[in-house]
Length: 130
Image (cartoon, rainbow, N blue to C red; front, side, top):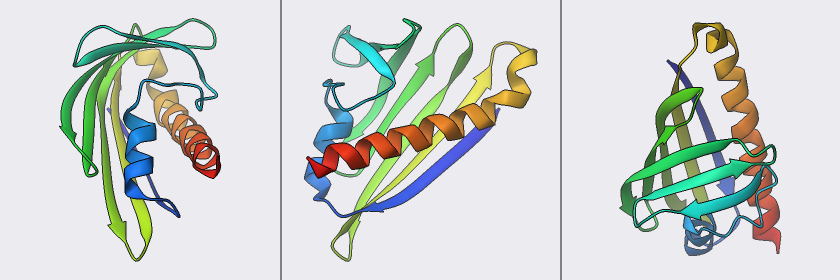
């Protein structure tokens, strides 16, 4: 299993950050081409190449905790997003734990996760500037 974590302070209201990361509006995401909401707890994201990943929400505590399981043809795992408001800043702490389904992918998973998290944070910062 590969684990990757990203923490950041954002100069934005925690409510605004929460709405952006939990909404099903993907206009702010540079890596996605679509999203399909299946029901209250399940959705599927499609990346720019059309590759689909299924998510199942496992925790949803407004302004503090958002978690989901992740599953696609290549990986399975879990994502945890924790938010807090400290000294006028929203603090995010996102951790992704992923197990590759193919042993050949093991050496590359952690780097891939870091790249994804960095792009996600960059997109989030841009969305908050609007």
